[in-house]
Length: 139
Image 1 (cartoon, rainbow, N blue to C red):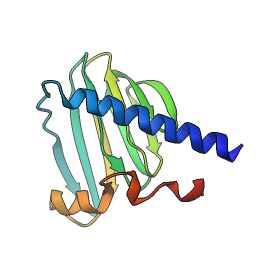
Image 2: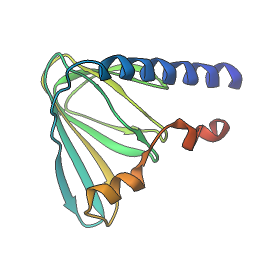
Image 3: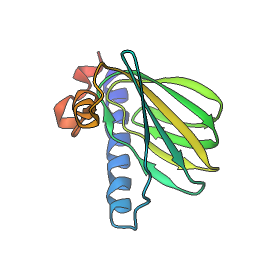
Image 4: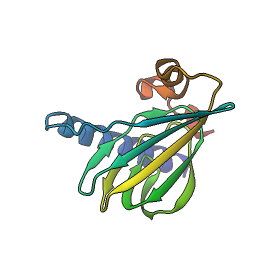
């Protein structure tokens, strides 16, 4: 069973990577995140316009997400879900998402860090690609 799950995760990763490649050849949205900081916490807020497709980065660690408003379909290596805000959920480590916004959506991710430099934070929380850490045999 572990082999079947591992293969499904790899297949979903490949599908998201293929989508990202196709989208990379298209005109890009200029989505500007709002960065917020509190003691030991970084929040990244993104407003995604209706009809947009966004492929995110690979997150190293589990973290909380809040969809404040809107409705999206989210595909990760672990499957797909339709989510409607307000909703709070946890992302698993090694997660890269493809998101389709059915409506204008406000999405916030939360990451523990004492840093306030965005480049340093991204080094802490983002994998460059899956070759950095391939789920270590689905621990």
